[in-house]
Image (tube, rainbow, N blue to C red; front, side, top):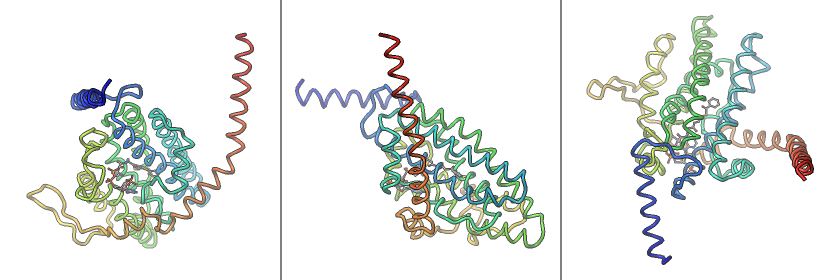
Length: 322
Ligand code: BYC
């Protein structure tokens, strides 16, 4: 085959691929896909998996200090769910031909990102409420749309994850309701957590569309189904009545209903802070990665034992087949 024929061949495959996407057909692991689609998916899905796993740390910090046995059990269940979400997402990413070990190595050497929000410290019990309500709330806005992502394994993973995330959000909001209706000190704690987590939760949707490096291609390939700014707007709009119901003050003093747009206009985010955090210089970036590396090293014996068992099992199977 000549080089010209090869290029024409790829162009035809790409056209067919895009037609399937346009027709809302899912792309499955063994289907042909452009190399850039595979790479972009590996990037987004693995960063999503890393976010779930690193996201266990800020809440894990409060399991031993939960105010009651019931709260401890609920928080423990939520954190375990997040580990499960990480596992589904790593497994789904592996279907694209990359190993879990390579994905973890990229997280640990800093070449793969995870959601900026998990680099903020959790200082009070109110932060457990704010994370469930706002962080999971912002994540859900995105994840509901990702249920319709074009890659089959990612889409199916998202359907299950969304069911669990709804419980996460409600448990967080319930903590906020109790604090907001409690003593003046408890209400103040709720307000303080809202003030600290509101803006970073808006940053979870990523940079403005005009600044988003991957959006155009990801929207064309339907990896993403909504743009960063549309997701953020959805979250801003849904949060306003929730803050009102709690009787707390909205942290955005520039927030205003825009009749013409049918949405709230909001104040600008601190994009310098966002850049700093995603480039490794947030409050907890180093601590989060160090903790992950330590836990990974301490778990090496489990992986070794698993591998040794696997070798033994295969040898036994080969022996009985002989
Ligand atoms: N934080 O071109 P853009 C959860 C990066 S966890 C850090 O707009 P894209 C939970 C971006 O990666 C759920 N980095 O990117 C768990 C890119 O860098 P690279 C987390 C960010 O991909 C525990 C660069 O900036 N959800 O629910 O088109 C407890 C340019 O951005 C961020 C997901 O991961 C950020 N916020 O759009 C509680 C959803 N924003 O890769 C809760 C899946 C941007 O070129 N991910 N960057 O080095 C997505 O939907 C998309 O990746 C994003 C960004 C909307 C986040």
